[in-house]
Amino acid sequence: MAVQVDGGARVTAFIDGLPDFTIGVEEEYLIVDPDTRDLVANPPRALLHECEAAVPADVGSVGPELLRSQIEVGTSVCGSIAEVRERLATLRRTLAHTLAAHELRIVSASTHPFALWSRQLPTDRERYKALTEDMQTLAQRMVIGGMHVHVGIPDPQDRIDVLNQITYFLPHLLALSTSSPFWQGRDTGLRSYRLTILHELPRTGLPERFESEGEYQRMIQSLLDAGLIDDPTKVWWDARPHARLPTLEMRITDACTSLDDAVCIAALYVCVVSLLARMRRANQRWRMYPLALLAENSWRAQRYGIDNGLVDFGQNRIKPLDVLMEELLDLIREDAERLDCVAEVEHVRTILSRGTSAHRQIAVYESQRRAGATEQEALDAVVDWLIEETTAGTG
Image (cartoon, rainbow, N blue to C red):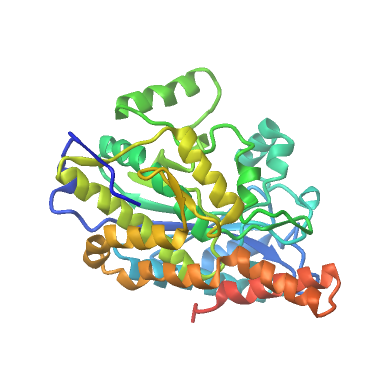
């Protein structure tokens, strides 16, 4: 991943002294019955309120998702990756304990190995009712979860400038996070099947590019004026300036089953933001390539995960992901040291050597089948592994 830079980037207060960025992480979990291993289409009504009450406000928040078999958490604003780890661990541990009282479990994965989308029930909230009415079957099929990482960038123009450049790195983060190889009992052959579901919706995929914050706001206003959206949060790109928070939100990644993997990806993202800030201070920027080319890398990450490499467009050739990630680690070394997350970003080597959640799910399934298990028994074993791995290392 050779450094590609162009001169002339605007330098603003955003990079003066290279601030310690604020960070927040959202994770979407699936609610599972440990006996049937299936999703719980209609969990107890009191469950969400119990989870909300169990999570201290200084740790984070809990909320519903589109379907009742899903639940979302978000950390409070974190000043370091160490805080991200602590709060994500607390959120996972607290939800697991609360659900256990109802003999239920949480799973952090972007799809369930065999659950049927047609059996899931929508959450009884106006926003979700409106979304289902608008999107019809597309919304009903959204039995998927992701991980979103927010990095605080106070100035709106700075957020747009970083958005334009960070698109290059999104497929790399997706490849490391893949956790959705199965869909309705089938091995899809993809490491991230989730994106095939998500990208059926409008206003998804790699983000557009904008010359200025004003141009971005004019596009949003056009969508509002035409009645295509009723609020800016319904722009669901793989990365976006958040409509209500002063953050740049990364949305492309699958939900990480491993807590360590989730923390690693959050650390990589904030370090890349910091790298781009440093480059701006030197009047440089990451060279931008046509979105059609970057979409090829997004597809490769979706299809293969960490296998078979991504294109280094600086050299115009496919390179193994371990080579690309070593180059990226070199580029962000200064940022990781300053942000005190060297160990967290270097965990990427563990992901590359032992595989993502998708690889490990497939390995469990294939091992069970070789041992004589039926397809359903093998899929049940995958769910058991997901339940255990979701709370591993949470204390």
